Length: 413
Image (cartoon, rainbow, N blue to C red):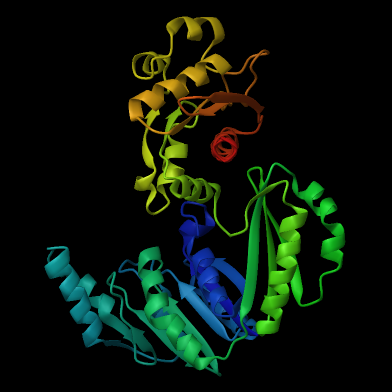
């Protein structure tokens, strides 16, 4: 097994100002080609900490991938540190300079400064990886039969560099075993109950096949993983069929995809359209649906009816309904569904209204109370939920449960 360490550099990562999405993306890409990510380390913009991380990770892994700290400002110390670490000196790379000049003069339409030109300086002990999306080139070093690659921290720049340069180089240099994954998604059953349900299946797995539980917002993904030849893949496929049968009551999909993708595929398969009327989720459901490429084929639009006035004026909710029952009620969400169906002229619609917290609850309707309605022109149904978590989790759970309720309605109608 070829082991990889990922080092992400930047004070902003340690204080939570920026979320490290680079490590997750890199790990997924590397896993596709049989590389095992053994360590992920975040360090600040501190010389000794970066140096120590390089020393430690080369003891653990064959490949050390580094992101961050390659900018033009004083706090970006990765390049001079790597220059010293690999016993080189900074020299101007003409290809990198040409790239910087092109970006500033042709793309940004800005004057090229001395600070920008310095971006093209690289250690003479590295192989330069050109950056087609930015000004900081990547750098590849070899030391004691270990590979070190330093890349920009900007995700789009790093991703292109990984796909075009780094992964092809690593695949040519290293021989890896294939890693096989099979993933399904369940909904409506907790992790512990699911584990009890399939305990005999899990206990019967051979040593080369592992089962992982990945819970998130009312859902649990089950992932079978095996490493090796085609025979292992065949065995995983057989056991995956058994796993699907055991979980069929709660099974949403047998592929590794989110609920919004599942709902989108279902709508596409039936050539139907959907719209949303959202109060408490503030447009989150519409956002999730439209993160899926091609969603314009089935998603028409949304009304974010956060205020009662919008519910009345745009969606046609009766003022008397709101007065008598409140915005968080079965009657209100049913009228919201009917209103958005007419307004958006779609085959299906869903509506949500709830109390996300931390304030706004009452004895009758505590924080986390949510009504969800789904339907078409012929039939509408509504369901009440009690989530009672923090605002963010309540909102996410509302969105996921609304899409799942819509999914079930379509399948049953």
